[in-house]
Image (cartoon, rainbow, N blue to C red; front, side):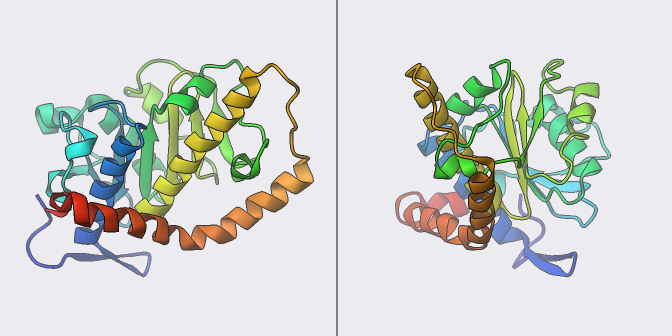
Length: 255
């Protein structure tokens, strides 16, 4: 259930965070992820830190389909506890992966973890690097931490290991697994995830032709990536557009 009653706000790093709106934002991106067929049924998870140290975070409960998640469904969890403290309401792999990421990376406010089709296909390649072959893939040039040390489903030690490779990047390509995006807000975390899947789709489609790729030179790819970073300031418009559609077609997401 939502934290308390009325209009909930927390101050994190001198930024006022509206918890009720954060819940609505998360519910919206869950539902839109399902509409885009980037989900995996009731698997995969998004989380959002609501304490300054990242120890307490909102996350989706186990067993609720992405397309049906409401703001009030999101659970308030504590990274210092264990999955057994929450019973069957929490997927253990979700708690371990997100708990470790929030605990060890307090800057990781919002985490989107997905096994979307094209990004996961890329993660299955010996070299899961996304090359800059178009404007969208340039967004991620030298900005993805690539992990090729898959060691199981993300429980315990594997989750801790994954949490140490983020560095100063916003994304982790999880080899043989999927990917996660990390950002200050649900709007940016989702925008990165959405465009990463699109970029992987274009890249793998181009590779499937077996024709020579037109890889963009590093200098131009870096220039384009920096232009994307300026555009990051406008990602709220993407989420706002999504929420306007949901407000009209599925207003219960806000409940």
